[in-house]
Image (tube, rainbow, N blue to C red; front, top):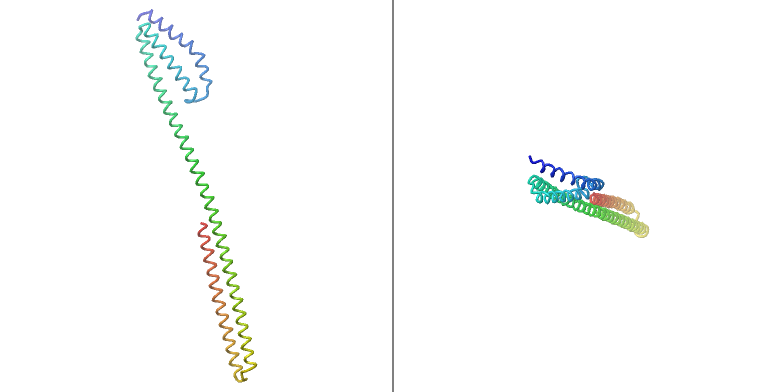
Length: 208
């Protein structure tokens, strides 16, 4: 081993360490753990270190220093590529998070719109049901008045024109009409309740 070469290499290594000491100290104060400004600054400093070693190795014609410079330069290149890959991955992750946030926001808006539409349909169904109930009640009242008027006319006819022997028969007919009226009323009421129940069931199904 050439002692002069050994001294030169030691001097080069010591000089580089002295020069790098404040720089490395400053880099450690930068933010970032394995990435960010700290990692990029470290890569840059290591690249300069490898370049300086290559120049010194060429000037001194020292193959050991030159080979060390080449290894350091290759390591720096690998770290730089790793940092670039990591940065691209983080960027893609951020973009994916943004897309997910937009989809969630859109889904929330769609849910709110669906709820509003369901409420509007329920209100409309309730309004229509109330209108049908009111219409059925009105029809029932009209039928009752008509029945009473018919009964009154029958009584009047009995009092004016019909002989007494037919009075019982007419009254039986009146009772039959009353029974028929009740049957019609019960049928209409059952139909109205069935329609109302179907409308409520349809409204609930739409809400679900």
